[in-house]
Length: 155
Image (tube, rainbow, N blue to C red; front, side):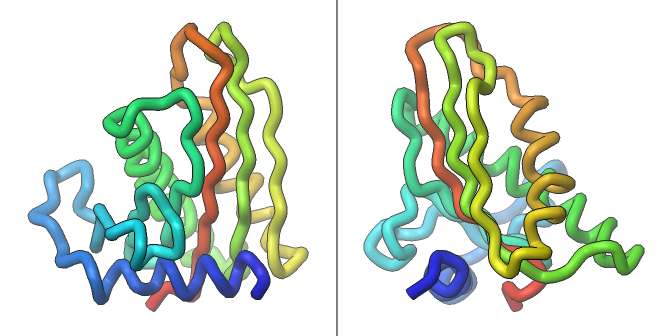
């Protein structure tokens, strides 16, 4: 099964399994979080918004709180961008796997994107990469983050 199909199935479950939390004002776009790992297709943490979903597969070198905060921050940025770009007709539905390496200085050393369909790569470059570069990772050991994102087909 391709990662986009797996991501769609696993991230779509977030609406059924995790009841919506009472959102804070900065999280009003989030529908469901804290998906049980066994039900979320192996995600450590998953967030489902109105037009997008984001699942954290790996967070080597991060504590749970930092990993959850990173996932929520990126999910909110993704949903805002996807909402804006869909309203302009400038984005197609898609899915992306994002592998990020963070160096000891806290800078992104490498980002690898794998997108389906191929045209969805533009959505990842527009809606995921800029928010990743805006994150302050802080100094420390080298770290790795692997995320899967889905937009436009989460309902």
